[in-house]
Length: 193
Image (cartoon, rainbow, N blue to C red; front, side, top):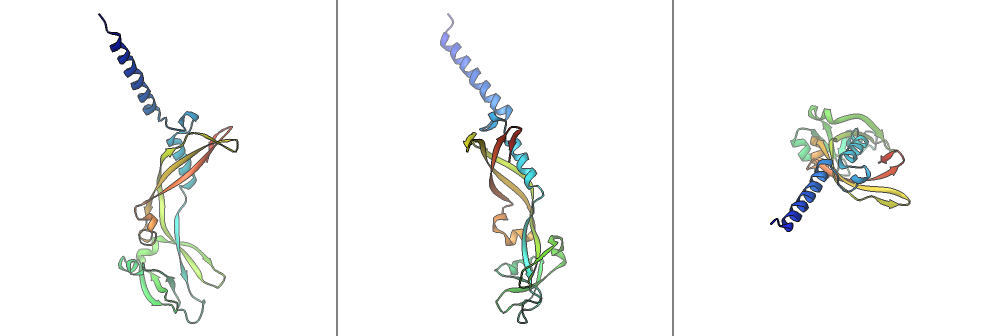
């Protein structure tokens, strides 16, 4: 005689297995039932940051005061590492203790043509620290109501191509990635960042 319990077990295994296959194959995760998947959220985040560069700046002290030497200045303890890497040549020190430096040829690809001036005539040069290479969404919340609008929170990691300046001067970039969060809101035409 056929055992009904075995039949129930087989049906349960097929249903559970089918459900697992469905969620795995469609990429359904929290938020996905509403049409927002990790992949779609990642594409939207990428579009918003892909042209963003992580920058730092170095001041140029010409004309600040007669007691300050002419040149770029950097305060902190990273000058020796920049010099050891061949990115700068230390040429002196200001009366305030900041290092005066020149950029080497090796540094030139990371020195941007943009500059800006502070009110007291200190000129600054922007330095490229990193450019984003990809985004990975690591989690989506279930849709919720926020002020009448349906929202989903996404956690993500941005991976960067970090320059030597970024590795030395920005502790947050040392491992080539930074985490972040984004809120998506559902509009009549779909999800927006």
